Image (cartoon, rainbow over all chains, first blue to last red; front, side):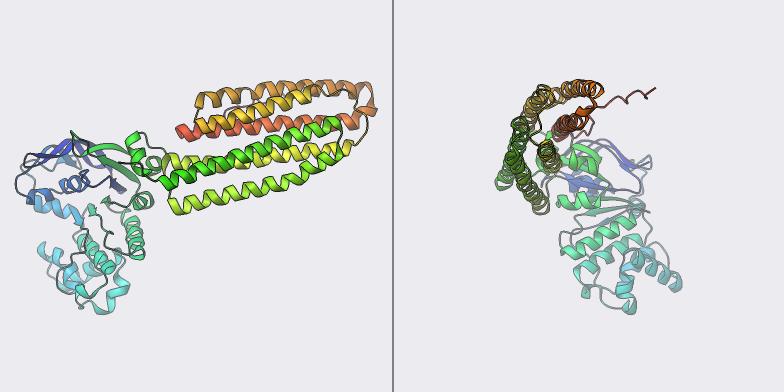
Length: 255
Length: 225
């Protein structure tokens, strides 16, 4: 089953074209990794999936992005609701300067959940799914910024999970983390993929190979920025890619 | 890009070719020693088999080191995986040479029941297939690999011929049975050798295309009546 599908997606920053005719079907409850060299458009593409690019002035998307068959760029889309359904985790952990509890409770409160007992349940459940509960349960009032970076990143994942999204977008979520914290996030992604569709941008090819079910390789050339070159099961892409450009990139013969 | 790694891959291939020539030489020597009924030369083939085993383990260690340290992907990964398979086949090929040497010792100086004609032919065919299969790997030549694998049929035909001939001897004169079965075993070793070369040809195709496919699918023999 496809959770997200794009058709002839083009994207522009002002007059600068950034994505070229992206057609992809992202499978539900699987981990899809986007790889490619810097400037290939993978982060731009990721941010198209919950219209995060809308926040940048003079940007423009053309084509279609379907979430469960509904075009998220249609005028009647509720963008706030879209971003609840399609959550995002960023490169640097960005917890609010508040307690662990309040970080996770933030989203549910915005959505109108005020009962202390219910909030406590949601916070616990979310921290558990983010694999952080056992490390913070004794002191939910501690400042989120006092956690280690790896813990902060898992807190950010808990914050996303707390609003019960369907898709989690991750933009290089481990680039600021040490190898152990990275492996914890990868384990967590695997566990979360039972319930959520995950799309991750990563510069780390080994991470894509280890942690994803499907891999998309993107590339820019002189004329066209942000092309999707190849998309397929991760095992195939890393053992026998179909396109020579993918081959050159993953074997390190690129450029 | 990745020059050091490319050099490592090249060196890995060179080591594999060296192993290949050691194996070809072992087989040639084993049959030569049989023809001349040279016991010392046969023992030398058997001793030399240890060196071949060691060489194979050394290459295997190199493969694992490259996988661990270079995280090869795609064609690089397939090349290394192919080398791992090929050196296993080569090592087994060497065992056939050692097997022939052992049979030579068993036959001893007892006069041959017939001149050896088809066994040297099988040897020649085996050695030619070995050389060309390894060259096909170096050249990443899928067409050549397919042609060489098809030649396994010629070796099988020679084996059948030897088999029938030796059977005739055994039927005519039961006193030949002991030596005939031993010569039959030599032929069998040479026949299996060619099968291993076919495996190498499969690895050439795999390295280039990523496809894993059996090349010589043997028709199941008819049930004896």
